[in-house]
Image (cartoon, rainbow, N blue to C red; front, side, top):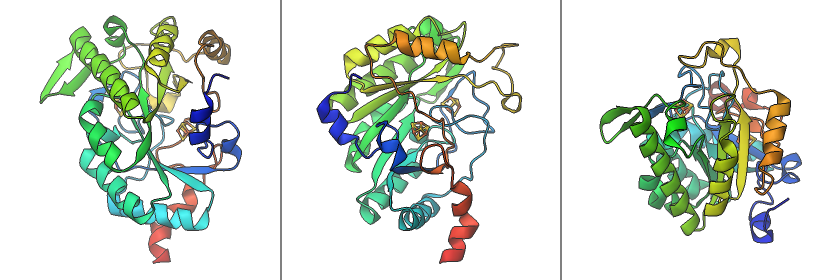
Length: 294
Ligand code: SF4
Ligand code: SF4
């Protein structure tokens, strides 16, 4: 694969970023971020954000204090827990007070735990300085398009500068903000992974270009995730019969982006996932159980 040694060293105990580490190290997500500042056609707001998580599951929403208590309880019983992420259920950076309060408390109370965050990127340029204060060294940006015409088929609206904006104009602003946020993070030495949702007939032919652009700007990993169209998740907004990609289409695209380091073991975890990738011990650490520990 294409990962430079210096980056490999930095991610060696991060289960998501190192194929080897995902058997030995655990991660957890805390769901502290309910709001979102854009609409993705594949999102159903009743469920978790597809920036990072498997859409179609509902997470237990926590306050920052509850999230910290939960993290400390998990870290005490799962010593391999190296990474704490905020990944939803909405967009973490559209909830800056809740997300940053969680990071602030954790950076004080559990400085050894690495922090990461996923975002649609709209607020990212405004948040980079604060992210750096809490030693957030991994950020995931979901970038589904670099062409506003294609973006407009994925994002019906954004809410930006106190206004709702629609269409190609809105997609153009979102894409510019994502790219600017990506550049700012790379400049400051933050590791950036890019997630893209593969939507057949919408951005399938375009994602190679996305991969090329983000690699050129210095993202270290590209994670192409299949659109999930399970019945309980509802239809792709406004499009009847939008289908998910086949495993073969996904693999072919990942192979076609061969110049970039591609992530192939993402499990699209829940916004409140706990444990090794592929296992979910969240049920052991629900709030009532953690409250009972006090
Ligand atoms: Fe839904 Fe996440 Fe998209 Fe927001 S960014 S609309 S929460 S999928
Ligand atoms: Fe890692 Fe993917 Fe799960 Fe995020 S959703 S914790 S990147 S495996």
